[in-house]
Image (tube, rainbow, N blue to C red; front, side):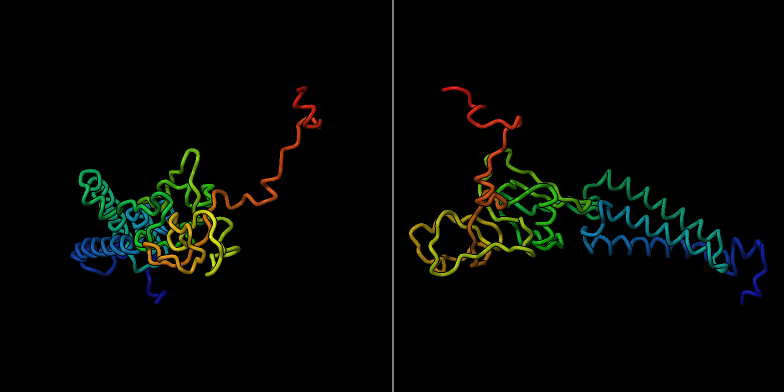
Length: 264
C-alpha cells in the first residue's frame, strides 16, 4: 500500500479520500469522544490525577492523541487533525467558562472536596467515596508530619487529588498511631483479660474510648460506632519510646549540666 501513496498529493494531504461532509462527522465524533472521556475520568475518581483536574487531564489525552496520529499515518489528513485540535481547545474554553459561571457544572466536572477525618476519627464511607484505603490516608498524613490521628482536626481530599490537613496547634489529644507504617509495625490490639490503663482507640476508625474504666477485660468492651471491636492503646506520640523520654540534650559547649545551671 505504501507504493500507492503519491508524495505531496495536496488533496490527500489535507482532505484525504473522504467527502467534505465527513468534516461534520468529525465535529460530532470529537464532541462525543471528548464528553465520554471526561465522564469516564470523572467516574474513575481523583486518586491518580496527580493535581490535574479531570478536564485538564482530558485535554492532555485528547490533544496528544489528535496531534500524534497525523504525524505517522498518511491516511489521516492534516485538516481533519487540525479540526480535532481546534474543537478540543474550543470545548476546553467553553467548559472553563461554564465552570466559572455555574456551580452545578463545576461540581459535575471537578467534583467536591471529601472530609476524611474529623476530630481524629476517620470516615470509612468518605474513604470509599474518595477511592482511598486506610493505608493511603496514613501515607499522606505521614508525608505532612502527622504521627497519630488525634493531631488531626480536619483532613480534606481536595478536588485535585491532594490532601489538606488541619492539625491542633498545640496540646493534641492522643489517638490512633499512623507511624510506623502498619505494614512494618502494626499497633498491638488489647487482648481479652488484659488490664486496660488509659484511653483506648478504635483500630477501625480512630475513635477514642474513655468509658472502659473498671472493666478488667478488654474483650468485654462494646463495639465502636464504626462496627469494629478491636482497640489499641491511644498514644500522644508513637515515636517517643522509653529511650527517647530519658534522652536529654547535651550542653552545646561540652560543659556539665551543673556548670550551666550556675550556683544555688
